[in-house]
Image (cartoon, rainbow, N blue to C red; front, top):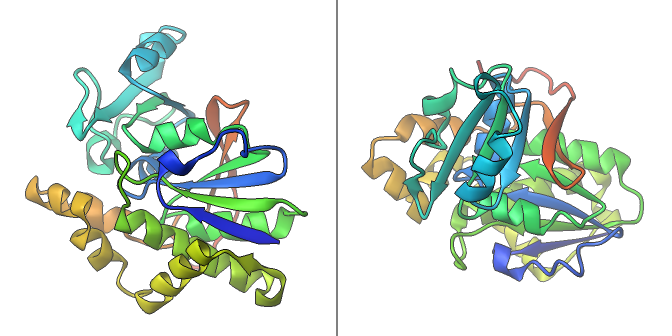
Length: 253
């Protein structure tokens, strides 16, 4: 059973994302962490879209009081949308359909949607996703997708990928897993800095930008590993649904 890691969304080959592949998408700062947070704050469902135009078209399908728009483009909050930061939207999403548009993460999700299954993962729920896949996988290849940022590598996504891979190998059995060089590098990087998730996020380019605007609370929140027992799956190439599994002694209020 093989695990391969893509270092940025531009490496996604949609032809190769097929019924023999399971995709696990990371955009730690912030899209996949935002999605996990939305469900943590009791959102009904999350719809990832490619841009603001599609988000507005999708929103018209719902009564105005049943939908919340969250999004950014090139790091700037889209006009009329909530900022994609948990501290900003956490009181807005309960019971609502969230439509999310981001420059990188939601695009990576949509471009990976031809896979047999697509899981949305972050540090927050990476442990739950890894255990779920390890218990349910057959002969598929796992493609771990680091969203990156506008065709560039992102440290925090690579760290998240390594976290997922390390957890998966531990659960599935090291002797049963073949890691490509990119996956092995991610795993080794994570294992070398396993206790430093907050520092990794702070030192990343996106993390430094968030600190500049005093969003340290959000950095601290999304740097927590394995605190949300959420299995997030893309359904019908359109919306993200949730399965819950227990993660012992871990829950962030």
